Image (cartoon, rainbow, N blue to C red; front, side, top):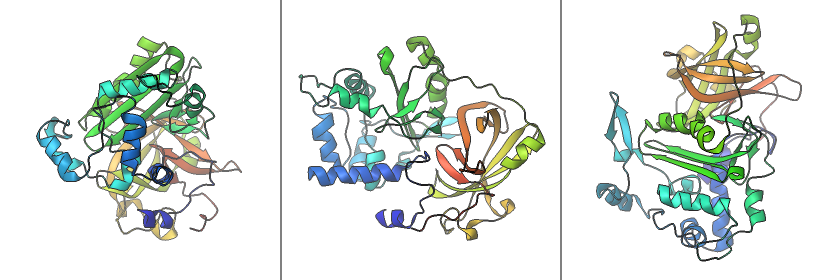
Length: 360
């Protein structure tokens, strides 16, 4: 909510550190409403969906309309994984309207391929109408801000494309999306005229995305590009010691946005990471009263982090040792001191970070 946003701290100076931020996109959606004098949903329909012939893409007016479409199978229902099997669970979708600029548009593979074709061509609709100039299309995926990691490494973010490097030096342009029961991957390689769309309606969907896109199988096979190399290496306990500790953060889990900490400990040349849930009543991340002992918190996810480059790690499942197909990184301050862990694009504050959070 707007009230919640005003209470949230500014974790880093504007434009200096990348962090995944749905609130910024929600604000951009509100600006579209102000400029167009329309609702965000109507603006998207009139300016994008109808001109591009994306007839299978829409926002639902309310939860009851969506429920009717799910019941009639006009929309692929979300599935949870129970005892290893997908189970239909329509209750998984619960998104407030203010989040629609960052999610909530229902679409199809054919419609999204149409959208990709628009971005890979000269900005014209099917009837020849010039919706965007080629210069504008290129600008959307150019001049990124600061990079880092979001699933994989990023050169930065355009408007609002995530710009991913490749081993061949050819830019990869993408935008993913996730909500309980639905996971989306949208990846393009403009220099190769290639696009791939992956839509899944199950909490098992991330595995398919990992195999097809994050693990770069489709990119290598059809576009001739691959992920930047990353070979894990073991560090000594002394080398790992500065990275240890309880990092303070906030993250979206199955229960929504809530306080979440990351406890890191050296273990056999890698870092063992336990994500710990804090009570909903906890204050904003970084406040002194947030800090508690790990044993006082509720474990959620356990993973292992293996360094492959200075401050960059590969993520593995803690139990099976299976690679998750994702990467994370550590951020240092201007003096070279460890300041943040960036995992899943979110920032977790290093326990030894100095300096006060800006006033809100």
